[in-house]
Length: 304
Image (cartoon, rainbow, N blue to C red; front, side, top):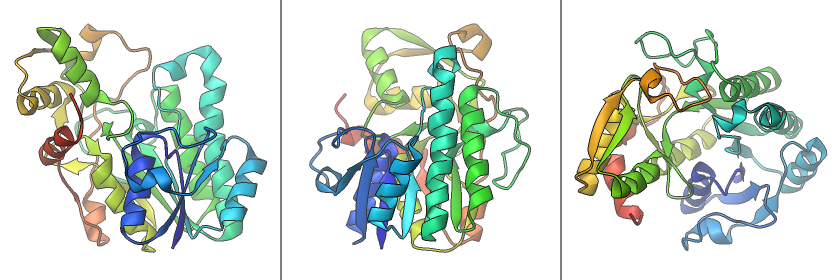
């Protein structure tokens, strides 16, 4: 199977290409830079065939995908700077990437009759209440530009395609690029105590574990919307930080604060990012390991 992966210089795309190659599939990597610019970690992704692609350019998308002739496209590329997305000068760019760029890819996937996996987010919901969000819930009410742009990407995929997977994830961490864990480790070295919000609840997602699920989806035809984060229970960012420092052997104190008390974010964040993942099991996909175990494996991978 030949699979084209967008956003390979990011956390998830990097791991998806490695997993595809590990399973014997042909992976073609794509991103906006002239050549691969992610972590030069010696893994298979570094030497994978690479295509420069600006997904906001519909003609370029058509040219590249038609040349590659993929059996599936895993669309990991996205604007993920949530707060920067709120800046007036960035809004058009955010929608161009997350909404229009996704539509460009979906349109060519339809022409080529190939599968598409679109990576989405808990931010498509309003984050109210305490009940886990169901993958087929249509009560969309994004609170910020990022969430709205990702929702418009979802709608484009479901409108144009039948052979698609929409996979919503949250609180992502991986080896390639920056993330919450790396930030907390840096801050924990510098300060005796840190303030972390304790009223936003969800579950982390380790890209290494998620990549295995995404490749399994590529190998199947069990299409639809799914939620995929690691298991291990729902937690706050405060709980997550406490466990990061415990496993890393840090003595840094962690002070819980409300989102309002923290007060440093331009974009509104959902308080309830609980995602129900039982549809994965019902459709024969393996659930991701517990986030505590994922964190342990991740800390062994990175230098901190």
